[in-house]
Length: 368
Ligand code: TXA
Ligand code: MG
Image (cartoon, rainbow, N blue to C red; front, side, top):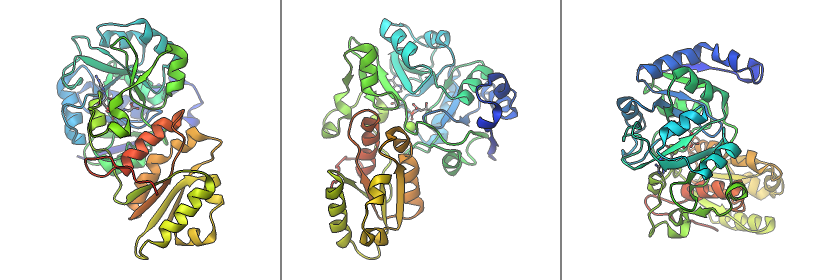
């Protein structure tokens, strides 16, 4: 299948003018394809999604085929209005209302008992469904114009990092889908927070763009699914089926750099010294760390990927997937990655980084 790639430059489109966005040919075409039961890749503020009509079971089956995704891993249903969200679920508790008011549209996915009309292929056979209202104007316009909610996982091949720009989707899904709507880079760059509101106490099933601290500000008590803590990785099954799969691990080995700046630099020096000359080395770090590196380290590094400044952690976290993809493209054998504190957006960042550092079917995080 030939994939059409259509660009929409939101900046050019007179910021905030929703009517103008809806005039875009690519969106009309995308909506038409969705109505016909096809799949379309589109930008969201977190990562790119691969969408189909969430109420059309056979259209949603295509998503699994295109991605090579296991059938027991449910999809997120993307909506453009509160009314649409409520139609997807059997119950809409007070906690959901509070979260929707505070964080929608935005990077928060809510898990609730599902309504009958949601096909079981979407919920992976579970009694619950995950719902999110994205804030990206292209995503919202596509949902509205299609006239249906969109079931959409991240638009990567299973086992690759989520795509944070059109090129990543192109690399993975070119010739597998009819249309990629390219809207440039994703602002959040990490997937949404998945929050289970189906029980008494809210539980984070996957850390993401909305932080635990922000959720606690609105809901009070918020727990973390024990199955997603890295120390439990082998013993406790995570509640979000997607979190149990082996996640993306780059071809190279990932080593985490922790501690104070000087410790990090010393560890790096020592480790690099013991590395064979043929090995290609990457460093994924903050700008401030990169600027303090001695020449002997800089000279030995093949790829220096600067995430951003420590003053702008969100922006830095948003570039992790881009950095990891680049390491593979550059045939890197050893990847040194600087840790963030596991608070705020750092919790989601470290969750993804540790998964990248864990090899095959067990997670063993290698610090140095
Ligand atoms: O930011 C995002 O969430 C992106 C964009 C496209 O919206 N989507 C995304 O979808 O990351 P996906 O399919 O790659 O990840 C969805 C996660 C998986 O871990 C899945 O197992 C979990 O959400 N999930 C979906 N439905 C669930 C349910 N009913 N109960 C528990 N976990 C669920
Ligand atoms: Mg995914």
